[in-house]
Image (cartoon, rainbow, N blue to C red; front, side, top):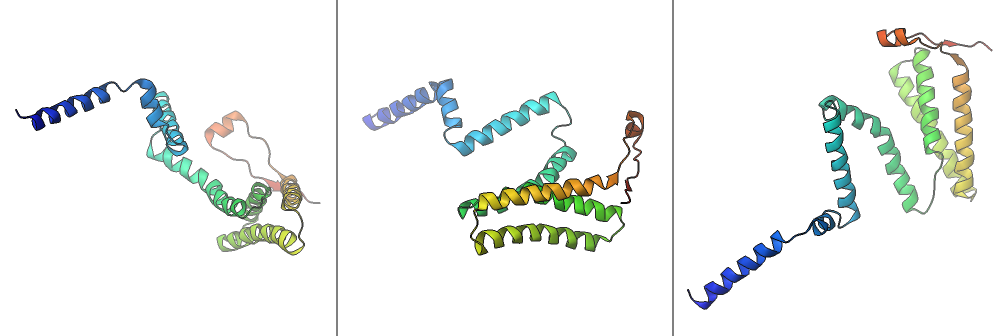
Length: 188
């Protein structure tokens, strides 16, 4: 063996020694070297633990349900991201979603068609956003105060709309059987 071959073998042994001497602390440090990888690894660890605790956790049905339930929050988060990037704040997003959802439920109970339900629900959301936008941009009011007031108004309207319906409580036996009691509207 000449000197070059000995040097190459020596480097390989050194690299192997370094890899085998990787301590648990160094491994954890590599796994959590930045915020994104740390969050991803913690999420994966939670998924592994939950899949061991509940056999139905990683089923296609459950994954679909989680994604469907988080779709509304994801859409709201995208809009909120743009607002925050622009230096503003909107506290009324959740209340506006609740108001639009309550309106949609009332329209379904009254038997409106799907197209009118979608259009009216979107118009309510756009109306809340337009009121906020005009107040902040047009009237030069503080976004925090405007959206806090809008949040209160949207929550109040949602509660008022909910108070106009009577939904009798379901007994545990009827809930287990899958029967649902019909809600009636109070007459004023």
